[in-house]
Image 1 (cartoon, one colour):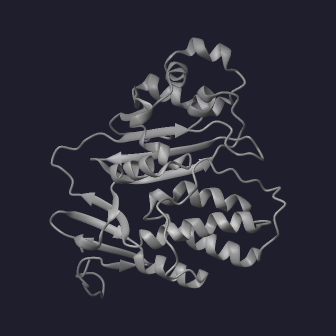
Image 2: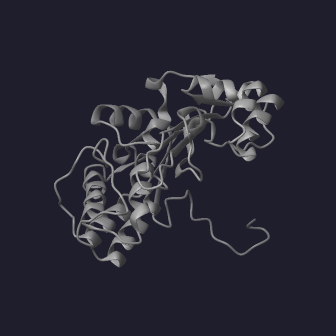
Length: 283
């Protein structure tokens, strides 16, 4: 490219749009510690009392909260900044998505949940993603998919969590409220959609046997006609061999971290297993 264009070689990527990158023979780390510190400073929580998890387990909040209103502009600004931080912090995907639901009319209850996230960030300021160097033998794409059931108290919609791994490295993640209301845990799990491209078959790991049966056996579809046709796309992927379905126990479901607020022990275990860790000593 240098022979064609006027350009300078600045060496290995170190910083780009708030993303701090470190590359070594061991692997690559990506974090946003400086950006996270600025969020804390803007929110007036620099030096705040830290907490171990971003959300209180089993926390339920409603848009119909009767608590006093707070400054919606300030609330949106902080949450918007947190949404960008999720680019290197999959451990925040669920909690930040949760507080994003209350942008229109936030109250002190909602702001307290945001401050809990900020207190967790202050404890894990130097955390980010670690990526191991790819092996010579490429491993297939592995997907963990999970869903809660009717977790949203206002709409009764479920939250889908999806984690994509390549060579044991977490390459993309999503925590998103489903577009329709699921009537059972089977439907909630089944509607955690997957869109595949032409490649080696991806391994999809889920912890719901009924959802697996629905994806593999068209006979089950007679009992699920109320599920929108687009959600049966996964069945076509299984039929064509583009996706391989594998059942895993609930304790092995890594996508749990993107669907619900967890206890400290479970949260820390999953955070470690998806390679979100302190990257300071790796730089």
